[in-house]
Image 1 (tube, rainbow over the protein chains, first blue to last red):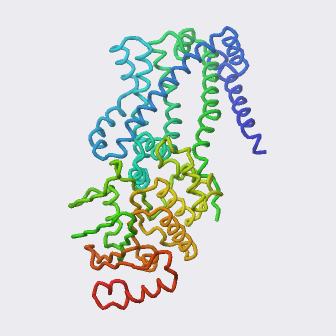
Image 2 (image 1 turned 90 degrees about the vertical axis):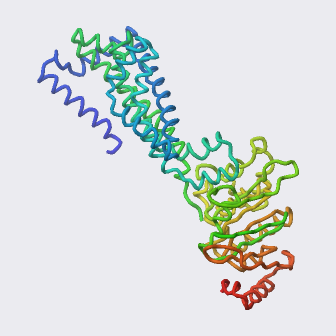
Image 3 (image 1 turned 180 degrees about the vertical axis):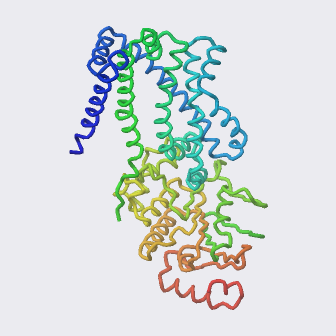
Length: 250
Length: 225
């Protein structure tokens, strides 16, 4: 019975959706069959893959940028009270900056370019990452750091073997919340200043009131993000944490 | 600590013996270069090739990297070029750790983990070996076994050792010279050379040395009781 639960859950959702569609009316809320047809149409024309591909690339680029900078800032802030006190107020400022403001200013200052788009997305994610990584860095075992210092481990080795493994749970949490945040902001960035991508396409469909099309892209996108979670993020996290699950011997 | 002066000759095993809180661990930290909050001077004699002295440190807790195997823990303290060489396997062999080479530290008992920590300190072929209560809270047979392995190693490769312990028998079993420390503020109150060669120190000899020390009238030795 437990193995069937995900299937049962999805079927229930689909049933509710169909019922809602029939009550509200097909134009405002198309039912599953209509949306499925729209999905197939977009897939056949290649538009679906083109826009999804472009959006996904932007998501990955912004993700890589935000994670690396976030760790690069969060780690020193977590380990050095001085750096923390110096840049703490800046962090609060950027955390509270509305995403829309960052995006609009990026386009104004740097033009309607790809770099501005991806940079704006990254800047929106970096403060969250810094906060998480800083908390994780504060919990780092200084005893192991002392050990690394006595044995004169190189800074690269210290980062790779002593510091980063301790940050794996934090980085995983940051990655997960980051991905969720980033793809939402990428859509806004595309809507405002790009000429391709899911955000751009949804804007187009909005102009023509094609609700089926909008829902089709939504479903496709959510499916891809779920795939990333179960196919990439979770296995990666499991691998990094396998040392915790080893049984103790006498 | 106040007015602490100590020195060790090359290849000499010096034991710092004293009650808890007299600063023995702090002293070790200062010698290791981990603690800079002190007034004074530390001189660790330069190597013949005038590189910095290689230090091995056995901490009170094993301080192994839990996310790396035993073998990797040993390899990581070696220079990059030597990590895949024979040194790691040789040490695993010497300390009877070969069957556990690919285990993670969470899979080891405390005695095993301490043994790996000792192996890690020795694999760098240290000029100076610092040991902070390395055998405390182990059951006696395990502690004896580890002391024996260390003794064997020291016979093969004489190393300058600073051993911190509150276990008088342990100090008498391993050291060439004992320095007795007063409680806070710590300083050296007595110096006891041990003339018997390490190899000849059986249980009876150690017990005799111990009783002799405990029976000495000077106030410094009252601290041992």
